[in-house]
Image (cartoon, rainbow, N blue to C red):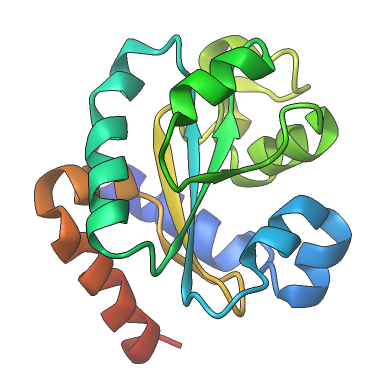
Length: 177
């Protein structure tokens, strides 16, 4: 990805995508609102799938980082799996929360809102390839209180910085408006 492409994606996500404040969360994504209506400052949406080979690399690291930081931030699994058994097996004994598998509309709306889904879901979601900004795995980190996007590259940050990524995101809460 060129720096220009990165800037365009960053601008579109951060400037044009609507903020998900508490009221918007409650009305648009009720499951996400109930998950993130706690005192944890960060909520990370993990768009992933058990069948995806690329997802099997960062998932154990994400689980380990989440556990080692005492779970003081939310990780919400937004599944692209084929059934609830796959979701439960993938999430396993982690402390991840999830949009219920049966709540297809809410999971689909989150995927459309952020443009994050598996390539094979684009048509099913009624999206165009241009509307798909991110594949799986994608970790989008939000400020819980406002829904402001802190990072759209959470997978890379977790893979390279481990617990340091969480500290970086927390610092961004204090430094960006």
